[in-house]
Length: 278
Image (cartoon, rainbow, N blue to C red; front, top):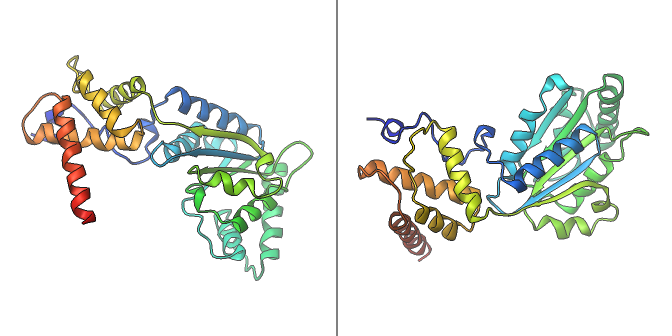
């Protein structure tokens, strides 16, 4: 009997990959997604989405891309790791991402080509170019300044480049040090962890999305309470702990996750971390 069959599933419910199909729309996540989509569609320029590790920022970004398809006139470009060593390297990366294949010998050449491309696509063709920067806390002050310059490309009505930065909270103090940067943000939103009720809703949502149709819950209310207590409501940690719990059910031919099972998993994880650190 397969893992999925044993649990009454058709797919993995607690993967930590940023799959929009499993994006749980808590009130905060839904508000962030809605406001972000509005800002991008209106071509407002800069959006900052901040949150601690594992709060769902990357999945939010992927969900936005599925909500705003290419046929609506949008071109999305994702930078997964913005740790560029120089302005020229960064601008060359953008040129390649935008499909500009000429030989650019200087940063000035790159900027001129990018500006021309954005004007051509944004004004002549009426398309919207969106640059999404994940792991934005890795952006140096210099890189933030380079992004600020790109945000100067605009018409009288709208910004030619939409920039969405998804970052951990530490970025906030850095952007405050750059004059006129934080003021340019059309959207500044902080994603917080889930409440206990939202944790329960996320678990139910993910199970249903993975094909679980039984009326018998896989997690007791006490287990959900323990999951929230141990994860503090961070979606990635919730998914990891729930996956380990379901794996344990299959391995030991059990049928329901209770708080004792969750406590055992957390204890084993804590012991492993302590031994690894020794």
